[in-house]
Length: 402
Image (cartoon, rainbow, N blue to C red; front, side, top):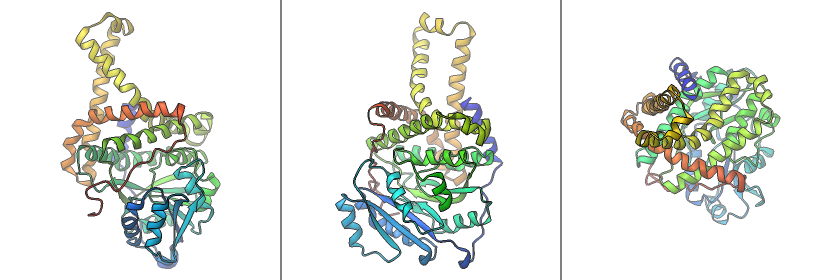
């Protein structure tokens, strides 16, 4: 089913185009609150402030709130050293459980002055006209548009093999799959940053779940359940691709744990998804939220079983898959994985990054790393379900050069 559904989305994506936006006049531009949750990010502060000041939007219509943990002395001191302008607010979050990004964002939501709210992370480098494009998308849209999501990708894509594969993954997700989900009006698991909300809709939705460690995926599902929709805009925020294996596993296991949390929460009342988004939306929840972690868990088992059969021809496997069923499963496994490799190869082509395409052939090795993170997430969902495993930023060689 996953292969068929992704093939279906690929066909839709080939025929879809991200809507173009027209600039608004200065008097039409809404006030926008920018929430920037920071924890242990002292090294990122200078570069972050340059990125925020480079935004092509009237400063008097920006309400920038830096959300700092009250006991994070290094980041607090670094922010104070910069002597910020009046349109920056520094908010200190009480250092109490849960110590999560969504809790900090909810704190900022209560004090937001903007008609729109956007989240940026410490390492983000949004294209300068991104807020203009988001404002324009809301201006021309019906009232059912609750959120617009900018595309995400990486500025250090050529740093090493890991960053190249990470870039292929994000290119496939944001350039191909999410636009197809938009066309289907299916629930869209949002990215963790550069998502713009109507403030009143965000309050109606209830803000972010402070205990979910992938609050972005969860709120995307809740938007759909209330009958609202998400739109992808033609703008990119460039982030720092994780270039160290241990750091990557910590980040990915948190994502996997959060996806599992999200699926468990929303499957308590599956009829609400079906009622709001139809069976297509329900299928999207299974394949794009649950499917991400369950496929990573089952993939090593399937490949191990296949290798054992090929080298031993053991009767135990033949008994479990009698007759032609074994051959059909082998064919499906090889064909399905080959299709996913092909998706990795074509992922960067829309951006003209042709030099990355060949690295898609090594995707199965990347999937093995994903499986390691998935098993770690499975362990943590039982023992540490709400623990936010911190990702270290500002570690790329090109961090200060880009």
